[in-house]
Length: 376
Ligand SMILES: [Fe+2]
Ligand SMILES: [Fe+2]
Image (cartoon, rainbow, N blue to C red; front, side, top):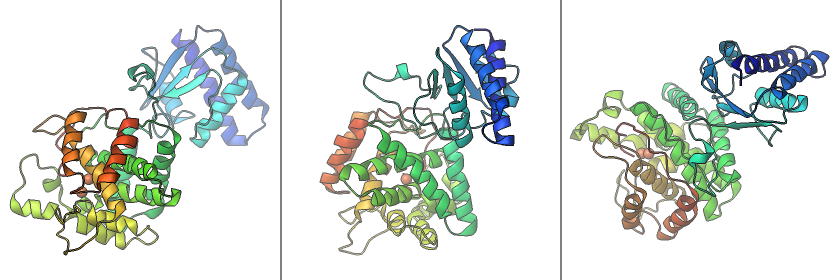
């Protein structure tokens, strides 16, 4: 596959996209560019895979000359919200190109487009076991950036940007309800901060799946997903020296770290429009049914169902992540530890649903090298 031809075809798509943005639908120039792109591709030996990196486009190992312009133009959403790899196959028509442009413009990839497919390059379909389905909720780096922005805004303003949290939760709920399997975005964790944000996404995904499996209403599932994404937001008030410390925390630091549930609940209580369940989840996600954990609850305190949902997802994600003092726990070992807490830290029936309907529908988390996360 000559890279120049692919480059020309993508440049034609870029031109059609630019025309559409400038002049709107229905201009002959848009169809002309789309036809040109389809003709160029029809003359080539497809299939091939085109990967969109930051400012660079690579086709079958060759960097395309127009890569930077393409990444800044029509293809800017690939790798940033939409998957980063475009597979080109036989059968691409001008109509396929027009539908591709509409998807690139809207950021939404709906039904399959003939001859075209989007996927993540680092999780090729053949890496999945037979019968497994790959669903991603987005590029981990992009999502962690989104969540980091939310946290930064929360820390600075003293309240959560509710609309942004709800938009992210909507993506998570849609992805979880769309299929039977979810691949947790655990890859490419580069530092402690990134762990914290990606951890929140993972807990959001699993909590959403568990709330759904329990049979809660769509609205409740959505509210619990928002709450799960924000469960550790109190950590945004703790100094980075403590959050990023690789050694053991001293007593003062540990006490400060254990403040994060109360700090998070206070922040979220001051966030108008946020579902109240987010406040209780932030406060209770380290509490156990038998009165243990932290913050110390008064005798007879009943931990909310939503908080137990997030608690289970939180512990599971922490166990399945690499730490500096041990590797990520194998799945059976993690389940053994969770089993031992069932009925003590969280409701036994709820935990059974997690094992049967969330873990069994979730391919193992991608075990990437990641630094020690500071507390779940
Ligand atoms: Fe926490
Ligand atoms: Fe956590």
